Structures are given as structure tokens and as C-alpha cells.
Image (cartoon, rainbow, N blue to C red):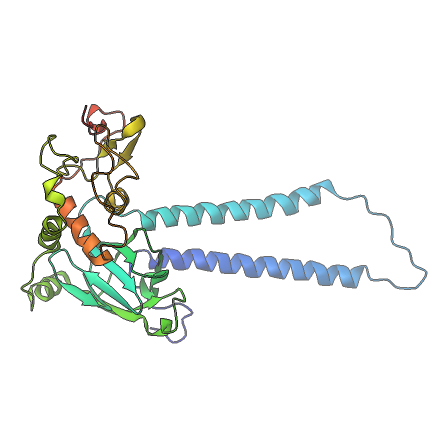
Length: 329
């Protein structure tokens, strides 16, 4: 890193754009401050009271001046809003294809990362250069914040929900991970590293020193262990809905509402199954698993449930194929 640079090293596709927006905010802030202070000093010098008997002239306002100092700041603020919003949504909505899905659990005082192939790391995250990486994050205890300064990305990790974001590393190297939210006494020890590798080196790293099971296989074992398979049969005759080809699709609920079966929906259905009932199925069949399953195992179950579904092709909402999966009559 250049010691004279005010920014950390840039190592992701969005780092330059974030820096550009930050520079714009900085220049506008300094410019507006200079203009305001300049006007204050000019008026204090030009219109100061010159004698004790002097009485100032009555001022009845200036419409052009009031329009000018209202419209120009408004337009500048709208540019900031539009620029920031566009950058936010582009950075936090991952590409629909060719993403590498990784899973992160934050807890006092570590980041535990799971790769779909089964490899896991603590406070270390290995990723390939030039490929979009999607992180699904959860917290085991309190609010944490996953922050990679070199990638210009930060995401709060809130207990009881999943958060996602994505990035694409542009060059190999090691970059700091911090927790950017005070999370307890040893918050400052919650530090890790991202190691960005060239694709061939990443494949060598992924294949080396690992003979464990994939997350999908671990999730399938948990599916059996918790007794899910006895009710979620692969047909409509089970006591609970079939989970094949459910992920990513819309599901018809009681009352005629529909919901997309994404990570958040499946997580809620596992922990609090009575929160949303698929049409045609009874309540109080499945036990409540709130507080019974660690976040790490929840993510393994999630990967297994994803593996039961075929990828959903992009299609317009009005297409007949986008109709929700029917419940049981």
C-alpha cells in the first residue's frame, strides 16, 4: 500500500467505485464548508456595525437567492442518493450464475467459514481471484459486522437472520478481516484474513488436506438425525410438504398468500414451523427447533435442501412457469 494514500489497498471490483463516491462526498463536504464559512466571514466584514448609532436597513428577502441556495444543494444531495443507492444494490445483489457460495458464522470471538465441499476454516477465508463469491452470514450470539477494508465491503451480522453480500477479488494476496461492531470484551481479537488465490492455486488448496464430507452430505445426515425425513416424503402423501424442487420457487400458503422459498423462509420454517403453513397441511406437526440447532448445522441443512432443487431459470413474473407450487387440497 502506498504510505501516502488515504485509502487502503484496492483488491475487489467495487473498491474503485466506492472510493470515487467517497471522494465525491469528501470534495462536496469540503466545498460546502468553505462556501458557508466564506459567506459568514464576508458578511461579518462587509456588514459589521460601524458606529453605535447605526441602524441596519430592513431586508425583505431575495427570491432568486433563496431558490439558488435551495435548488443547488437539493440537486447535489440527489446525486449522492442516486449514486449511493445504485452502488449499494449492485454490491449487495449477487450475480445469478457462477457464484461460489460460502457460509460464515460469527461468534465471540471468531469467524467460522464453511466451503460447500466440506472444508472449514476459522478466521481464514480462501477465495479464487476473478470469480464472484457470495457469502451467507449468520451470528451465533450477538451483532457482529464482517468488514474487509481492501474490498470496501462491510455487512452487519444480526442474530436470528441471514445476511448476504458478494465480491470479486481482483488480485492475489492476503487482506484483513475485521469485526466492525463492538461485540464484547474481546472484540478487538476478532480478526481474520482473506487469502485471494489464482484459480489453479485455489483448486490445489481446496483439494489438499481434506477428506471430509461435503456440506450437503452433512446436511442430509442432520436431516435424518432430526427426524425430518419421516414427514417430508418425496410426494404429496407425507404429513409435511415435499422439499424437492422447492428452493427458489414460490410456495402457496394458507390464506392464498405466496412466499419465495429462499434461505430466510427455510430458516424460519425449520426454527418456527407454525409461522407459515403451506396450504393443505396441518399445524403443530413439526416440532419447534428454535434454540435447538446451531447456526453451523442450520447452514448444512440449508445446503442439503438447496441440493434437492434444480436451478430456477430467470423468467418474467407473468410467465405461467412462475406460478407458485400448489399446496395439498
